[in-house]
Each structure stands twice: as C-alpha cells, then as structure tokens.
Length: 303
Length: 274
Image 1: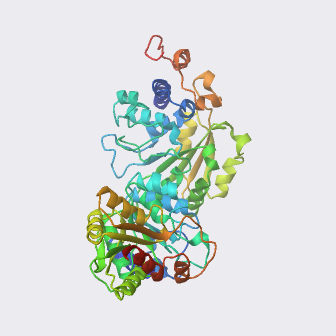
Image 2: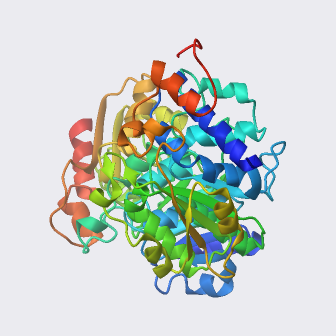
Image 3: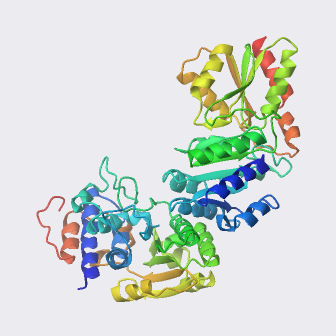
C-alpha cells in the first residue's frame, strides 16, 4: 500500500511541479527513487513533526501542493494543533500521509499503534479522511485526493483486503460482497477479516453484505443508509477504537436518517491501550477484531 | 516625526481605542510592537492594498496573535479596509477577533493565537519561494515568551539549515510574559547567541528606534535567515502601562482611557467609553 502511494505521488510529481513531499525523516529505502527523481519537490524536515506540518502548510499557502509523510501517530497527533489551526483553518492544500494504520506496527508497542487517528482527524473541520483497503486503492485514492486537494488524511495500512482492482470513488462506499441478512461495514486493510467472516457465515446460511468504507469523511451517508435499511443488522469493523471512528460515523448516519435497525454493533478496540505486542493478525485476534470474532458477533445478532 | 513614527503613534491610538471599546486584553502587547509594525507596514513590506492576494507581495506573519489589534490597525491605515471597521474589534459577530484572523480580513496572511505556530509557517513560505525562484520576503514577529515553545526552535533549525535568507524574524523582546518576567519564568539569555548558534544572522536593536529597525531590515545576510532581537518596553507610549504585566490583561476604561489617550496626544474627555 505504501509503495502504491509512492508510485502515485511520483506520477503526480512528474506532471505537477507544485507537488512537494515534506518528510518526517522516515521511509528508509521507500522514498529513495522519489528523492533522486524529484530533488526540488522533496524536503526532509527532520524529526520535527510540528515543523514538518508547518513547512507543508506555509508551502501550500504560497502555491505548493504539499504532502507530509511519517508513520503511526507522528504526522497526526504530534502536530494536531498545526493541523487544526494552520492546515484546516486556512484550508491549506496539505495531505497528511501516515504509514502504519491500526496495528500495522504491532510489535513496536503502543506508541506505534495508530488507533485513534480516524476519530481525531474526522473531527477536524474540512479534513478529508481516507483509509484504503488495498494497494490499488491507495494508488487510485491518492490520485483522487490530489484532484480534490487538501486538507486530507491518508491512512496507509500494512494489511490489505486482497481484492482485485476495480472502480473506486472518493466519498462513495463500495459494496464488495452481496448479502441481505446483515451488513458489515469495514475500513482499511481489515476489510480482509470482514470478507473471511462473511465467507464463514455464508456456509451457515447467513448472507452478509460487506461494504468497504474507504472514505470516512466526507461520509457516503446515502450509501450507508441504503445498505443499513436493506439488511437491518448493522456491524462495523475497524482497527481503531470504537469511539469516534467508522462505527460512530455509521451510527450517526443511521440515527440522522432514522433508519429502523434490527441491531447495531461496533467492533473495534474498546477503551483500552493494548499492553502487549504481536503481529497485526495476532493483535486483531487478541482484541476481537479478526474474522472469527466478527462472525461470532454476527451469528449472535442474526440468530 | 518621520512618517513611520507618525504611523506608530496612530497605531498606538487605535490599539488603546480598540482595547477600550472591546474591553479586550493585550493592550500592552500591541503598544510594545507598534514601532516594529509601523516600520514594516510603513516602509519595508512590499504590498498592494488594492490587491491583497497579489502573488508577488511580501508575507507578514504575526505569530504573537494576541497583539492582533495592532496589525488590524496597520492594515486599515495602509488602506486594506476602512479605519472605521476597527470599531468592530472584539464585538459580537465581528471578524476582527482578539487573536489575529485572516477570515474576511484583507491583508492578514495567517491566523494565529496559539503561540509557536508562525515561524514554521513563515519558514515554509520562505522555503517554497526559494524553491520556486520567487523574490518575496517573509517577516515573522514573535513574542519573547513564545520562544519557550519547542516548535519555534524546530523552525529555527530548519530555516538555518536551508539558509532561508528571505526569512526575517523579529522578536518583540519586552521581557514580560503572561504572568511575570521572562527572566524569572524561563530565562532566554543569551537570546541572540541562541539564534546565531542555530545559523541565523542576528542583530540586536532598540525596538522603538525606527532608524535602527530600518537598517536592521535592510541588512540582509546573503545565505542566512535574519533574526532581529528588538528590545522593547511592554505598554510603550503610555507611562502607567509601561513594563507592567497588569496591562497584558487589563482593558483601559474611563479615566485610564482618557489618561492613556492624552499621553498619545488625543483628548477623549466626554467620548463614549471615556
């Protein structure tokens, strides 16, 4: 997913000299080609995320189309006020790219778990929030974010859904599996667990629709409400706390539209910090975000 | 009195009036930097009030956004909008917020108010101008207390490293911060030496001496950003406000307002709010 983003950015940089990548001193080996090809469109701000964001914002306010790049919470939480006051209030054309959504860096510990970013970024006025589910989607959505312009947040995940390329439109949900008994909304690479859960349930005669919500903001309220109305049982899945992220966004859309639901359940990290480490698959299972846990939840509400 | 000195006097009158009408804080902060702002807006900044978005203009950022009244006054005096609009400062429904805002206010480049933001943005602007071959200069005014913020030094490192000679910082060094003396809070000395060590061309001037400010702005290092440490007096121009932390907060009302304006050469006895 990360390489797909860099490929998209390189193509954009080639066509548009206003593109400026402001790096937070990360991406060893990943950005080498970009740096060599576009020396005047790249700057390493060092280990200083507040200033990375400020440099991107100041550049954007004088005509650049800026991208900041770092991992985990560094380009979001460390410089949250720069994003709020400077980037968003000035509607500056800055796209924040965070590599390592959710438990992507599962062995590195809690500092590297990006598990509140969607909620926090979603609350900033004017901020577009995108979490692709596959590398091809990271490429397509980078192109569409560029066309739309910042402020934007792009959450890059190590996991991926494993689906083939298809049409994707920023701000529109994407049904990736038909179903009518329940609808499962997922965002980011964890869509893979949603698809596996639906496979498991299918064998038992429970037909689960799976919807990819790659754009958390602006949220496709109509698409969500339609799927929720048709299926009745609504489940959300995110590698993120259950507060304020995808689950909250879907709940808000359904409540605003007064959709009469049979049940509603958010699956995500509860109000805790994981105090253990492990790979992404291990942590998903440990905290109830894997296909088995998701299938169990759906079984309980549908039966 | 030179033109810029006359402008500084008018800015001081506006600041006192605006803080009186709105009942707002930070009168001392505005008076402290009135001379710096007058020299910048009167003589140094390349601007066109009829075209606030003119791409070739110089950029000015007030990082100590709490002193925004003085910048609004300078913009009005330069003709970006009518002086009469200053009366709306701090009032219900007004765009002239206590901390400087760019929304709907022609000429303001950056909204600030949270300290430590302006220099990084200014460095980003200067970096991008340099990258794109632009001739614009970028000026940022910081407060002294603001230099407690780590983000100031992140930006100072960046600007020094990239030799942003089109960037100029002025520190309004009035030696008072929010609730006490800078030297008792977080001592900044040796302040000039710190900026020099970060790769900046550094000059120290009397921040109320227009000739000294003028030459400091003219004196550009070829391949380094410039930091002007401007020694100032908080509340300058109104004797009973000078060097008093109280006037970081207190709004001049009644007799205090009349006395302050008299010192600035205007008799407002009998005026509303006097």
